[in-house]
Image (tube, rainbow, N blue to C red; front, side):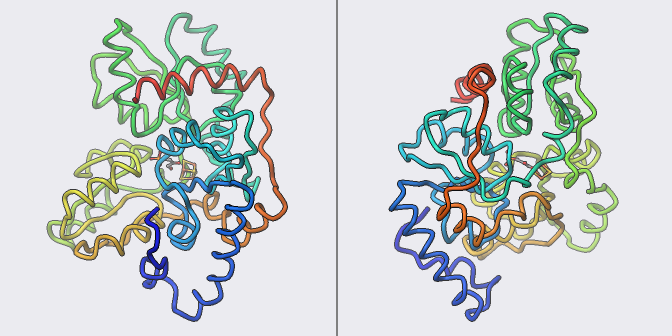
Length: 326
Ligand code: 13P
Ligand code: SF4
């Protein structure tokens, strides 16, 4: 994050001064505790602006957060994100303390599949490589060949195609699989019945209505959206890829078909872009709040623990993803 910039400048549109005055002592206390405990806060792009601009050390999509977890020198990682993200950090850094401010911050995709489900798929389809979205539990990762995120799934599936595979599993998100299939038609992508409860709510009718009302609006959609929604968008990509697009291209008007905080977090740094609101809240991400981060650092809770054997197997799949994305 930028140093020596008053975080209020970046969040003024969302917090009246009086509200920020109440939050500021908490921001300062968290930042002091981070130094005292040699802790780092890894925050996903869906965190609210007070977290994103006030206390996060690293912000990014799932891929960037995993890359940063793998190389941090801090003793403690506070994951401002959902459980699977914290578990991924732990898998990569078994010697570090990884904390999540709310253990109930889950994910409908991670809950859609178990390690036993993957074992059954492997029995039924021997030899078919299993690419698993990072939005899964350590148990599921431990059973798979390679992980992926929305930022590198196309690259990874293309690599497997180039190695001569004719079929591949991309699990558990059926929409991520369908959207990837559209970009890589010359390998058959098999999938699972998982879906993101946030992104599956978007429809093409919504997009058409926005296009009718806001002429020339650029529509960016996350690949967890249904395939027809992604088709109706101008571009699809991970949360970081959407942010990069806005920053590089500076569209006059844009709609981010994803979680609400994304637009809020980049509004101040893109003053010439008009953000049209069409977003959904992720109830799991929104469990992470400034008071809970403060409590987490003060009490060093709640610690993420992963069975070492499962972690070692899961790490192979995550490491392979990081190598492929380097
Ligand atoms: P990104 O990797 O694109 O940030 O997505 C993570 C996620 O959970 C989106 O819902
Ligand atoms: Fe999971 Fe969807 Fe929330 Fe992302 S937005 S954490 S995929 S439920």
